[in-house]
Length: 323
Image (tube, rainbow, N blue to C red; front, side, top):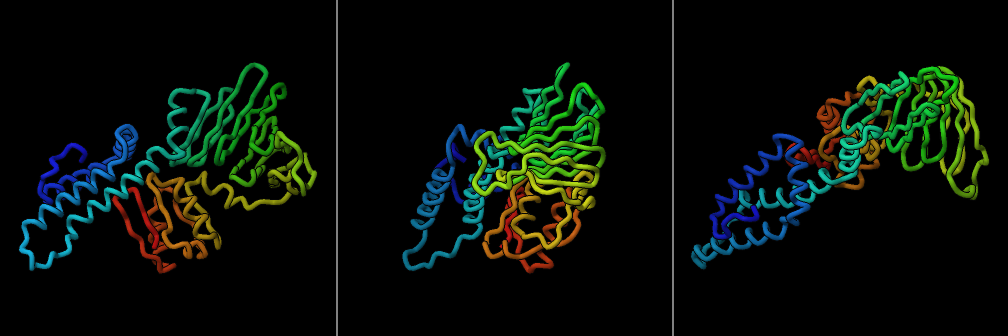
């Protein structure tokens, strides 16, 4: 597109853009590859606009002065799509998922699950499952079993070892166990710890002075079936958690109950190789309920479109707009 003949006819540009879109749809690797080249070569938006103006100008000169120029939908569509694709590819290919994916290639202690659940056996015989868009860093030696939950959600089945407590570090505190089964979910506001078996100690620590309005609670001991939260304000109370909803992701399911559409979209994007977004801000006020498969995002989109009367616009296989 950058090096094509500036004087090429519009039908040749149509064919070029069609080939480009078809190539993008062949594989996610093509999307990432193009995004990397885009970063090195610079944006193609201005060259595309220049070619569009040039082609339009050439055609205008060929037409009689009194003739009305018809709207060139066939040509403008690929131009617009390509301009949007350029922005999208930078977002998808070089977004938040690129760094952890690359880091995981070169660091054996760093584990990252991109768009699906990942199961990994740890050196001590423990097992960890990572939800989509989740990452952990492992530090195991003769005296230490330490995990940093970098982002997302993880489930741990801890091998019993009285000499080496199993410690998971989060941004709001630590979870310590000897031999147990538990789930930790982290978002920007809080960390949720849900204990399925055994016993764990949950300790709050923010690495700084206590926040004003803190609940001053810094330690909670959980028994099987209990959960608590950690946030900048301290540790929450012990509560009982919904096992079906908490364990659903490990069974390839998503459970929504009157969940705001904005939150549903966030979850869908963790399992989708492209990007889903609501164009109309008012759509975020709608809610979704249902149980869906994590490996069939189209099923969820179809359900949302059918029940909420939302129009779905697809730009290739990677961009889905809810209007």
